Image (cartoon, rainbow, N blue to C red; front, side, top):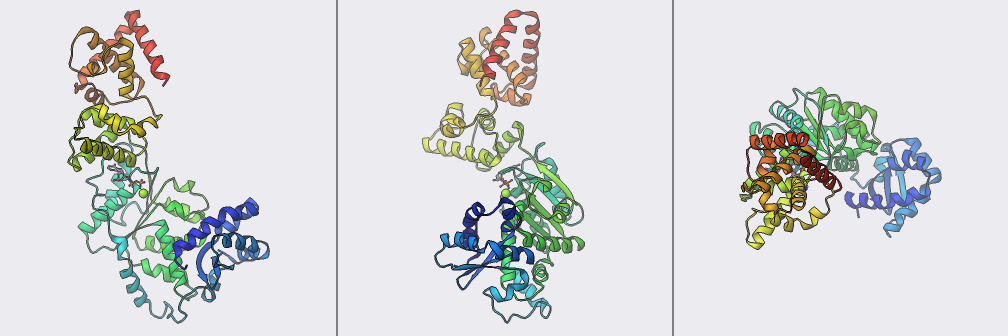
Amino acid sequence: MNNINEIQELWKKALPIISKSVSQIFYDVFIASLEPISISGNQLILIAPYESCKKSINKSYKPIIEKAVMQFNQYIEGVQIITTSDMDSFVDAPKSIIAAEEEPQEEDTKTTNSKDYYTSFEASYSFDNFVTGGSNKAAFVAAQTVAENPGVQHNPLFIYGGVGLGKTHIMHAIGNYIKSHSPKKKIIYMTSENFTNDYIDSIKNNNSNDMNRQFRNKYRNLDVLMIDDIQFISGKPSTQEALFHLFNELYQAKKQIVFTSDCHPKKIDNIDERLTSRFQSGLTVDISSPDLETRIAILRKKAYNKKFDVSSDVLNYIAECINTNIRELEGALSKVIYYCNLNNVKANNLDIVNNALKDDIDNISGPVTMQFIVKCVSDYFNIDQKDITSKKKTKNIAEARQIAIYLISDLISVPLVSIGDFMGGRDHSTIIHARDKISDLISTDYRYANYIKDLTEIIKKK
Ligand code: ADP
Ligand code: MG
């Protein structure tokens, strides 16, 4: 086994075992900073960021590490802790490579070609396919600015936000845009894992003392460098060191740098402060969870792209039920499409969605939905749920509908247009009228005050 992914997997398994046998502080300061780089002979080679770290581990804790590693791989007989200055003797690399200082050009060409695969972008992750709303507008506009004029404004651009909110989509959109408008520009997109592996590969495969410099040579001709999920660089001091120098070089040459992370740069643990401050030296923008209106618009766009006909109230309902992240929202729509195709039915009523998303909706203990309020009102007045969202004008139905509208606008934050859509395609002035009418009646007619009080209690018990 000398595949870097397998070696890292092995190390990941050993770490929890090691942590049980050493003090927390020793673990955080020394063990967590080790990086596995290769297997040489029957020894796992771990690189320590500095000499005193190597010495402290060798002094007392090497046997613990060896025991943990050997549990997961029978061929390993020991570990060697090294620092970058010991590299040449321990990695399985040819010893006769000419140092980069002597033949830098050859090194550059070789690596630029071999890294071409980083430059392909997912075609559907374009700016056109990205729906904007309050939650992501700032990141979207900044990304467009960067794509139109890389390296001029917002350098670096640092986008952070929770999982499934569109960070990777935006990076690919930058890549797609630049590739189509300025095909000559050299642009690399990579995950921080790719970056770490590439760094480790580069130090494995050369014997120069100036490894960081050689590594940077690979990237210095770039126009744009994008590293996705940079938070995973946490606890990897030598990769951080390499990134720090690379950053400075690209930045000084006015080359665009874009990062994404699942949290604000300040919240990334175990990271060199010099990097944290570099990350924040350009523009830092967040992407947060989209509001209902944006979620509906995203679903509408996705349904349109998939050429799938789906009614507005079905879209609204899915968007109300799935309020976690956009990846799940897409997943829910795909399930509905699949269900409809399988059963040869149209996506035009909520029962279909409930059936298609049975498992997902049961698991959602999210906020009160419009659907839930309508159900409570229909139970309370003993009126069929469908009548409330229908066009029927019978007095008791119309009144229950107005009460439902009042409660929706009072208890949950939903745009009036969405309420109108949900209530059978009514226009927003009808919604305002219903809401204001009930609001007046509450203060003049005790019966209405009681309805609203009772129903509010029922709904809030959810
Ligand atoms: P992240 O990288 O933040 O975890 P992704 O970029 O992978 O999230 O997005 C998850 C999915 O949601 C992708 O399929 C992406 O196209 C889609 N998506 C995210 N945000 C939007 C948006 N604003 N408009 C359209 N699709 C989006
Ligand atoms: Mg991502």
